[in-house]
Image (cartoon, rainbow, N blue to C red):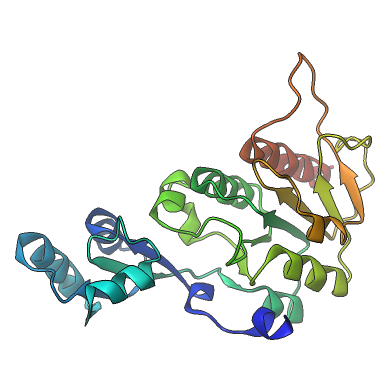
Length: 254
């Protein structure tokens, strides 16, 4: 388990976008540092040439690979269209590195959130609220792909993403580093707005259907809820994340 937490992955440094339009958009955005473009061997014609020209204009290297290899690297065999680009994410780093250096004060942990739109909106909201770290595990959570980038309105490229293998490993690492963990749970008796929350803490957001996983729940210090009325029993996880993030902002501004 520990080796997976500490292991290096290209997904700890890059956001990989795939498909002709997302790759061309990334190459056209001069604010983005595109490390490389990988183009399938069988990609030919005007669309491929447009990508080659756009990469050449940015002095971005192009690698050729088999169509199968592109599908494997993209992680999406239906939408890669034979091309992908690795975009440098300047604030993305491994969780283990963040905990070894100047530790972030407020951390979100995504646990089992599989809808790309939700992940993208959470990245946008948390970044806007000044959250210093957003743990997006490589397993069990939607990959940071073009759908997530689109939902974040491009913020995913610059969000303070912390990478690890699973949410359970993130919870263990954070607890080991002295962070109390609080999970949003609709059945919790303690309100988010009344809870005594320390300045340095981690907050777990559970999946759309199952909520916080049992493995992570065992690491949690406390549960907090968002008060509901009008017969509504819960919020979409991205909406709940927005309430949480800006409640933390409100407290910090006092």
